[in-house]
Length: 81
Image 1 (cartoon, rainbow, N blue to C red):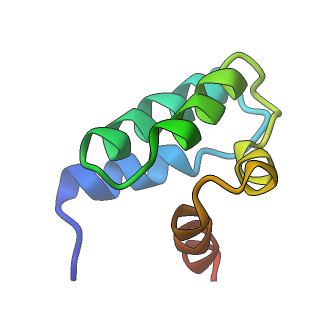
Image 2: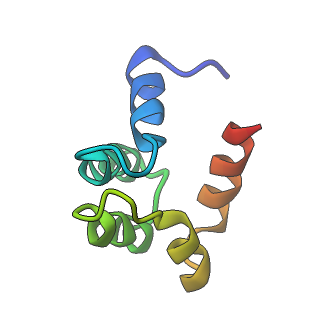
């Protein structure tokens, strides 16, 4: 399945590199997009929210520690390959 242009753009934004100015907020905004589509749980979205003010904070390990969204973590890992 090929993502539409909007989804592809949001996917790139949710993968904004850590440490860039405003990157935490960018990742959170993109995570909200996936939450609204039913592709991300409220618990995982909350982790993105908590990390949004800390540009160098990686939400993925926290999501993993909380055990709230294994499908999302798998999807993120596949994108890295």
